[in-house]
Amino acid sequence: MIHFYVKSTKGQTSPDINLSDLAGSAGRLDIISRCINSALWLSNAMRRDVVFHTILHGEPNPPIYIRIEGAKLRKVQPDERNISIFLKKAIERFKDGKEIESTPGIFVSRKSFEQLIEDNKEKTFFLLSEEGKSLEPLDKVKYTDAFFILGDKEDLIDSEIAYLEKYKLNRVSLGDKSYLASHCITIVNWLNDKI
Amino acid sequence: MIHFYVKSTKGQTSPDINLSDLAGSAGRLDIISRCINSALWLSNAMRRDVVFHTILHGEPNPPIYIRIEGAKLRKVQPDERNISIFLKKAIERFKDGKEIESTPGIFVSRKSFEQLIEDNKEKTFFLLSEEGKSLEPLDKVKYTDAFFILGDKEDLIDSEIAYLEKYKLNRVSLGDKSYLASHCITIVNWLNDKI
Image (cartoon, rainbow over all chains, first blue to last red):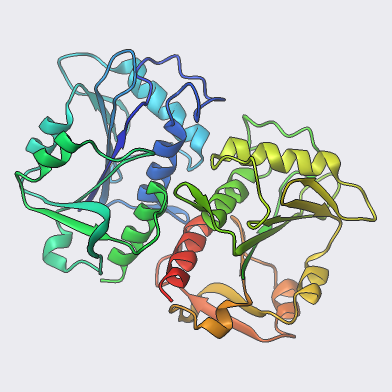
């Protein structure tokens, strides 16, 4: 199983999302939607071995944690608008105090970044960073529990990185250029396909 | 310079595009918009050495050819909706009989696939195909004039492929899996960055 976490620095946490303004008032939910597309879609198929995680940190009710399990996902189309409709449904159905499966394969709850890392501490964390070691196709052992961590438009903050450093953290790079988060995910998936 | 052509099999050719239904009534302009994002965007920068080409084959006025030159592109944001707004402007400003620069870096005219290939016949054509030879980072010579050809949701038709075969055509593969066109473009760009 391969996991991707993309921080949504300003993703709106009330369900009155304007689907015509994902890149504006919704707090760049366009980026998160494109990342979900990159993480989970093949041509005419889903990546059943991928789990996508995000935490929306925007107003008015952060943090809201959303997990999308490729193995269970149904009904969603790969365009930004359709994916965002399902994020909106997740926020609508969010309830404090328990995890809800808002639609098939999409789970929503209250969770901080630190708690998410704690819940996944048995996995191997990879932080995408231009100063990291060049990422090569992962070996099979690592692949079974790789957990990739990316920022959206903004990088993770220092305290988040410090928290990650409590665990085994691999800093990996895709090269000298700085890529969009969604493009990084596409490349990581492709490198893993080459195993 | 690197070129990408993505066929838009059903892309709408009248300007009354419903931006809330790109994946439906607009004839999958969501796919073309994602391909443009993949071809031209880096994080906080544009790929100035990339040119993106598409021909809209949908009703009511096909074919409409749109070319986006990374070197000149301005004002466009990387989300599907914003890119589609600029495609819509191109179709609005289209005039039969001459090429118009509808907004900075975006050019629109009447052109068939065969004419586009004829205009670019000095370049080296690469057709993405699962049966092709594994694509490796291109050498510098090829890179200066590589022209990659992809379908959207549908493959090119036999007569288009036969036309391509009049010229030097390289069939290249990204592996055993079948990827979304936008993901293919991201991977090809990344492989070229590794030169």
